[in-house]
Structure formats: C-alpha cells, structure tokens
Length: 268
Image: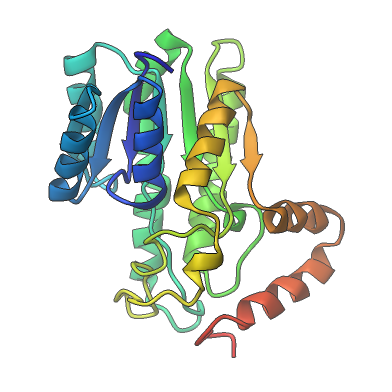
C-alpha cells in the first residue's frame, strides 16, 4: 500500500476514520472526505504529524458536484487514484408504513448515489491504475432487515451497481469489492433517521459488544490486498447470508424475531 493514493468517504468517524488510519500506517497517501470539515481537518493534521501525505476535502456525497470536486482535487494533488473506498453512509429505523418518503430518498442519495457519483468520476483513474473500488455495505444488502427499508434498499442498490461494474470491467483489471461488516461499533446508529426524518440520537444496541471499526478496517485492507470480491464479517453475518440462500422463509421469521428484540423496536 506504500504510496498508493486512497480516497475514503465518510472519513470523519467510525469505519472511515479507522480505515484512514490503517492505510496511513501502511504508507499510503490518504484523501479524507466527509461533510464535517473540522473533523477531517483534525484527522489530516493528526496523520500529517506522522509524516503521512494527506488531503482533506469537505464532501457531501449526495451532491454530484461535491463528488466531482473530490476527485478533481485528489488528482490535482497526487496525479492518480489507486483505491476508492465508498464508505459514507446513513441508516434509519422505522416501519415503512410510518415513515415519510423523504427518509428513503435521503438514504438512497447518500448510500447509493454517493457511491455512483464518486465511482463515476474516479473510474478513469482507477482503470488506469488497475486499482480498487470498494463499497462498504452491510448484511442489510444481502437480506431485507425489517424497520430498515430505506437502508436495505440502498445497500441492495449498491450491490447491483458494483456487481455489474465488476462484470463490465472484467477485462480491464479493475478490482471491485463489497465488504459487509455486520453490526460494528460506530456512529451510524446514533445518526440514523426515524419515521419523520429526525435523528434517532441513541443507539439501540450495546456498542461495547460489537466488532470494532479498527478490526473492520484491517479486514478491509486485507481484502483489497487479496483482491477479494466479497468480504462478509462476523460469524452471525456469514451464517445469515448462507442460511438465507437455502431457507429464505425460515430466515424471514428469524430476522424478524431478532430485530424485534432491539430496544424500543418499532416491530413490537
């Protein structure tokens, strides 16, 4: 990874921040993208203090012009792009019958369209480098999670896009990888949207018992090194995806019961 130019969206916290630090430790040149300009500037300062070449670009991935600006500034500074990590994302928790449609639209704008926009403008440089494009997804991209209609929809859409891109570029040397971390300790549940579009505020899960963002970042980098197509983390996640292939009806019930046990679950 030494001297590779890596763009990471959603780099201000959670998996994005941990991934930025992991790549930095391996000698990569790190481009930090997020809406929180103050935070990514702090991270850039932290990494620069360790001798890492960095660039912080305030980016709202739901805006096409921001994604183009991110790619243009990266190329202006470093002259190439080797790896694009589409990590920026937002979640939600509400039953479809209760939510305003703006909630689903917002999730698709960030989780799906953000991936499409950034990948579109980075693609010529990634193809030239025979590099990697990564989508940080979720088990929700493999199975429908109740009370997460917008989240599952956006991740399923991301999978469709990236899987098709992989086939289109099969003879061009592009590496396309989807990583599904499972439940990970991060800020995503605190910022998750509820039925009226406001933020949830408190996570319904015990974050201390979840996989750490740092552990996810190590699996992510390892997957890129091995040029894997899919990385599914946690034994629970792997079992869910496997059983859903063979026993989908039974898994519907299991998933429902599991999600209903969350604190203040809308399924109760």
